[in-house]
Length: 474
Image (cartoon, rainbow, N blue to C red; front, side, top):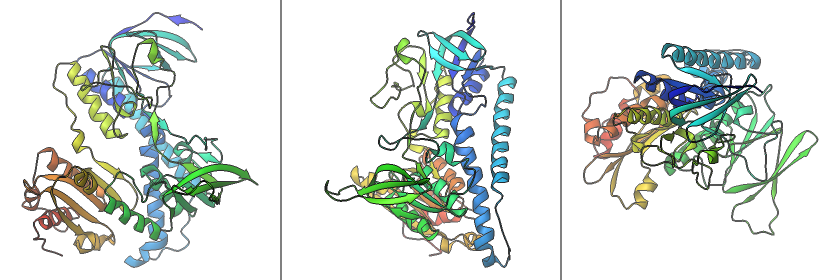
């Protein structure tokens, strides 16, 4: 295998996902000579290739199919013999991924960013080996940014085999609709992919070790989500831990027990065509050879960083899923911009208290800030304002009235501490709450702000009014 001479850069970014490619572009804008290395042929990382974008494409398509088949008659629209062409649906998903990936390539060219293809591994604190089918090259840089993202986490007793026990990577590309699907994990990934395949006709059972859906979200909203998804035909088994998986005549038999079950209590069994393990993700550092650079990691394999994303090695930084924090594309993007701005002497900053979370089910769930459980645990006095979409005129026009807006405000200062939205277009509506919290707004500020009528965001204003007990339309 041939070895080429190294090339020097101001910044070498390892990983071309949302954090990496955004950081590379911002660094180039700031006048740095930048290279970005990516082991996959397509740019965009997990989010674009096998995560956010493909899953949302499938969610949008299958929701439209479900509406046409089951709901449009409420609107006076008759749709007969509605069917799904799964190969066409998957081909459209792949085309969207290709288009967006090529777009990033175009942005690299526009910003004069050198694209390096291959697997990166540290040779020292300032040099990186890049290995590909064409050979091996060694690249050096003044600063190095690690943005290698994450990969699906498996269960010790239920390893992925890619055929019967699958991760989200395979679940977005199934060649046929499974008759029965068991999903382990009622987090965002588990619920979104459960929705996709339930709409297409699969019998879906979700197994969750916690007491309700979306552990970590506001408990009231998680329970509301549970009721909504049960109404859509998804079955749930809560407070139960998955045991072992066995193959039996081309089917999967998975055992489970209540998490507080005694050792001598017999296990229950579920039989399915596929088991999707969606218990979260873990930092991806495979092949990076961090030890050769002296980069420290924590007990979960995440790269440890200081306040401004510096690793234990000067001039090496890390962002995104590979460090502590929520594994969200937009969090990585913000970190990517902030870290290179600090490299350039600009005071880049990320406010981790105003990072929004979104679950793209139907209805969507989005939130920012604190949950009621977190406020109670911190002994913070708060007021609550709620407004249901069933009383919102635009939601009635859309025939999408499930859910509500919930605002939590400080009891003394009225500052908004958290906003939780379960309802239509929650992923878009949450932006108003993020801006309000970023600017230190009170619920009164939202309540006194004019909102167009008829619109869904009027529910946000009504919830803000409800904090002070003066909502108008409920």
